[in-house]
Length: 171
Image 1 (cartoon, helix red, strand yellow):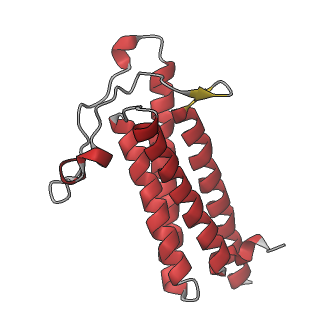
Image 2 (image 1 turned 135 degrees about the vertical axis):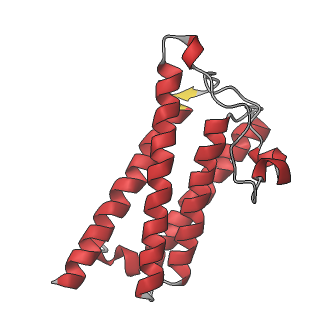
């Protein structure tokens, strides 16, 4: 079994994270196109966080032997996972709200003007759904709840791996 402090320098760990991210994006596409569930703004933001994890895990895979690239990849994955966790938890909390007045979100994603992804690729980044709608659940947990668990897991594992990796290097 691989020691966790070695994970940041092991290509297989980065590849596993990349494949998990791609799987999550494939599941999102299935929910959208296969089941006809329209994503809301918070869903699209969570999708972007998963894309961030995928991009930085691919960077980590390609540059796992270079300490600077490895550190950049760890920071990028951690940032994406934390942002995703905050958005997913907020979405979950919004859906659990007893007052429907508070169960609304923006009508369109707020991407930077230099990268309006919802205009360039509306089939994937437009957000026609409503944040308060609960269209799917599994084992009693809604999609935002599952994404909260997933982002929390990624955040925890990457944080522990990063700290132990740095700790081991400094010893």
